[in-house]
Amino acid sequence: MRDETEDAARVAAGSGAGGGAGGGAGGGAGGGAGGGAGDVVTRGMGRGVGGVVGGGSGRGLRGDTGGARRAYMAVVLVAVAALLAGLGVWVGRSEDSESADDAVPENAASGELPTGPCAPTDALIPPCGAWWGAAVPYAGNGSLKDAVLGFEKRIGRKLDLVYNYHDMSGTKLDGELLTPDEQELGKDRLLMLAWESTVWTEPHHENWTETQLGWKNLASGKLDEKILDPQIRRIKAYGKRVFFSFDQETDARIKEGAGTPKEFIAAYRHLRDRFRQLGADNVVWVWTVSGYLGSAADMKALYPGDEYVDWIAMDQYNYYQCHGTTDWKDFLRSQRPSYEWLRANISDDKPVMLAEFATAPDAGAPQRQRDWYTQIPAAVKKLPEVKALVHWNRPTSEQAACDLTVNEGPGLQGYREAGKNGYFHQPVPPR
Image (cartoon, rainbow, N blue to C red; front, side, top):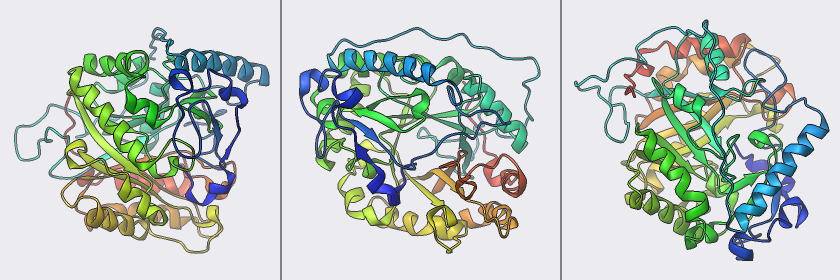
């Protein structure tokens, strides 16, 4: 969730920590408009920090000492140097763990795939409703599975879809696609993987600083052998269909130095072609933009073409006082303008995913947050091509006005209620 109102806070840190790591992918090939591979980008508000389900100190090293963070940064910079020099660093899996009391409520979101009219299509489109998903931050113990199971206990149901984010570092912490936790969760849930053409400075992108690898470098093929191919083969080996989004919120990345729209299209097409060449045909391709209509021209210029895209997606919110406005947008007002623009200007026959959505609270009228969520089942039927809704369950900053989670209170009440609706109980293909 890149905050389109905070562009001034996104500053390039020059050669800094990442700029000394080899200078550029493949030996300083450059990184497109506004910056190059090896630039470190720092976002302002970004997604913020914290928000671990069930309390705790945030994701991964949140709350650890500065020494631990510096140690992690040193490891990442070594990985960046290796990647940008064309060496690659690929490490093994971590051990999976599960406690005996991790059971979650059973419901129609899991079970055998039917053969009737409600069976999902090859592109994972549920014809009789929509997927109900979430992006949940890692638990304080570093486990994604524990975080998701804890969230499901709170909301009283199993998620249809779990969304998780990765960089191109190749490290098992963030750069390994389909981690053991993801594979375990994927046994009876759908997975959506976001893969960013960056190397994050902190675990789980905690402070939103990163090194750009550059769309131009990816499109050239020089990153195939050491960066792309190992992860593509992991996805192929997984077997089950997964949703996949390359450089989500693409329109915001132009300002961050990833490259130009033409370079993005070339990179996107090269990546999809590489999946095909390696026989990884179990991927459903989701083209994800912010949906911010102030970036309409960029979004239109970034579309790689119908033959390369299975779903189109957007990330729209009701930020309310988090953005200093008194305009409270209900669910439909927060989503319909961007939905209609995408249908009119990008594709009128692709399914639409709300790849991130949420509302900020209203401290003066707490029940507004509950009502925002309870309105979703009726409102989404006015957006008939929306076939997946993925809640972003993190605050965008430590300010209470920017807490987008539904971990407690009226927000949790409303989200639980919306999730009971039969429209969001579609049969998930088992692994």
